[in-house]
Length: 316
Image (cartoon, rainbow, N blue to C red; front, side):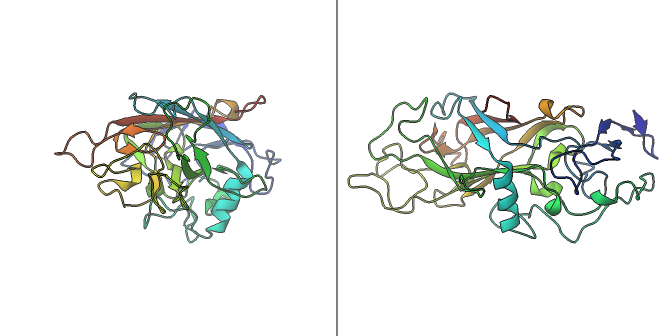
């Protein structure tokens, strides 16, 4: 342990890959301070060193595991999907120089005009590579892959998928582009009120972007342009996904609240980031969380956890 010029303890974690060595630790790198962890009073960003979220992040693919906390998302409970590193880099580069946004019209993931390390206790000549936007950082970027090195939406909760029960005729599942990235900006992520983290894990952005469904088959109960194809609804019901908020015709992008981030004390195998939603409105192919009551039209009864971990040798 060490301390900065104000006496605040810092946690020392062995530094991981550098800008010049995409897959391996750069020669000459020894260790680096995490500086202070994030907090609502101190949104650590590019004025700290290193700028990335975890000094030793996973350099391969990662797994996302879904856990139903409220009994309303059994179609998604236990689902494990893989996010691909190459797909994540392709997604962020496709939206360069600002990367993905927090939500429609929200804060961009990257700030290419920002440089940091203004802490005089940091040896600038040692950490020069980290004094720039993470847009050029070839790590901590993952997305659902297209199978050809790019990115694409994944279909969740389609009939015939493992664990799916109570499917409906004509249902096709929810088509979602999922990404996880370490952003430059604290406001690009979504921190739960009681989040805890190591280093700068507060800036991990888990982003879902729903794709509209088109060309419903004959007899389908959903319409062209809907995000949902299940369950059967009547004239008095509506489909909802989390970003819709109060309107079933609302936005299609949702940034999950982060509740904890563990950098693994220098061991990428112990890296873990956890996201949760509580009392969300999600009435679609995956979840059956309807509106609680007419007095709270923006509140549902869906609670879900997503856990991000490194992909093990045996696969997700």
